[in-house]
Amino acid sequence: MHVAQHFKGLSFPTISSVGPNAAIIHYIPEAETCAELDADSIYLFDSGAQFSSNVYWFLKYQDGTTDITRTVHFGNPSAHEKASYTAVGHIALGEAVFPNGTTGHALDILARIPLWKYGLDYRHGTGHGIGSYLNVHEGPHLISFRPHARNVPLKASMTVTDGN
Image (tube, rainbow, N blue to C red; front, side):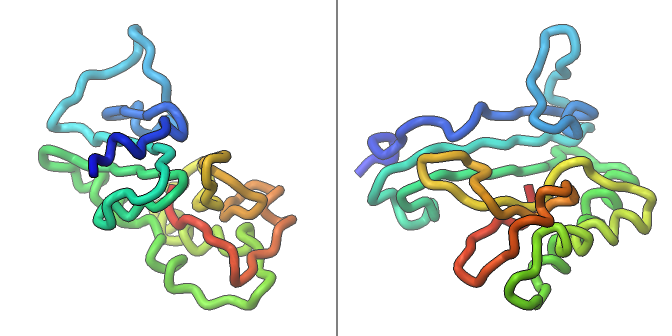
């Protein structure tokens, strides 16, 4: 069985960005401002696809929508880059134990506190629901600083990402 036969299309346009552009939310390259891949810069790759059934077990995709973001450095990251990258508190968020009905707005702060200690933040949501042939950021639930995240309590049956 070949994986390509189960590929049904991208779940969103691929984001590929380097250096300062890697910090731009949902970056779309333009000829005048895009940067070339550079071993001395951070590289961000965000991609996703829609798959049908029986995809190889080791790909971890079974019938649905994927959203995979990877941030890497091919050279020697600066001390600031290392501190910024490792300060995001997704471990604290992932280990959180909270009562049923807590909102993603209330939990979002757990991922941000380590960054705030350095005077840093990110202007993106922290987590979102997972779709299947629908919106890759399917809700209604999400983990975010945005006010609408206050409106949807998280429940035991919901699946949510941790780390956009």
